[in-house]
Amino acid sequence: MVASISARGGVESALGYYEHLGQDDYYLRDGEPPGGWAGEGAARLSLSGPVTRSEFEAALRGIDPKTGERLAALGGKSQNHAAGWDVTFSAPKSVSVQWALSEPDDRPAIERAHRVAVVAATTYLEQTAAWARRGKGGAIREQTAGLLMARFDHHTSRDLDPQLHSHVFVLNLAPRKDGTRGIAFIGMGNYAKGVLLPAVRKVPGVRLTAVVTSTGISAGHAGAKYGFTAAATDPQAALEDAATDTVFIATRHDTHADYVQRALAAGRHVFVEKPLALT
Image (cartoon, rainbow, N blue to C red; front, side):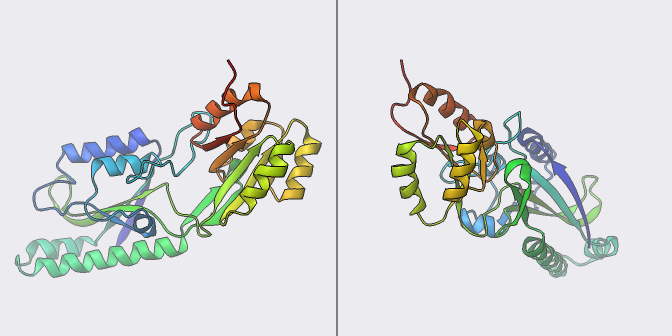
């Protein structure tokens, strides 16, 4: 078996690729099985059976197809989410020719052998090569609990030559191995230190990712004292941290609206002290 991989950077690019294949009846051609979900990520998101366009698009955007919850933060200056990679597994040409020349009753056995090989390959990939980057600038590498994949099995090429192969789209979305969620704080005043932070630290599965205050000394002190992995004076450091899922905003009232908007635009969940904004 031969495997090739190509990146599908943006969501629109990946969707365009998917739709182009659909227009060619490549994924949905008569007699071809519909795509199916695979991987530990699919199991955790309760995705099974055929891959629908709406589910595929939601997952490409880093959103739970079932609940609509944002699962992956938006990153970079353009605030977008990289879609994933198309991995194509192709049987040797001799196997494809044998399949084409076989009697109809014998072909399913060859197809099953190909699918078994693909499952073995993707399982190995999931167990050994499923890594993610987190932290500022993606400096921290972390093994994930698995992958979210959409697999499509085919019998012929676009030119209708015999070619047993499978497209496995590996989405840029994976469950954390430790099952935790990252929490960042913008502001570390008395209420944050005395009420919010003690409550947050009691919640199982919480990681304190970044703390932002007005001065580097206070940020460094809070980070060391409470166990944050990063400390900064620029709120953008917390918003761009790929390890952060939720941002607690505990700053002056007149800054709340701006920070809330920026955090939501970055795809973060937000908890903000009242008031939400000043008129």
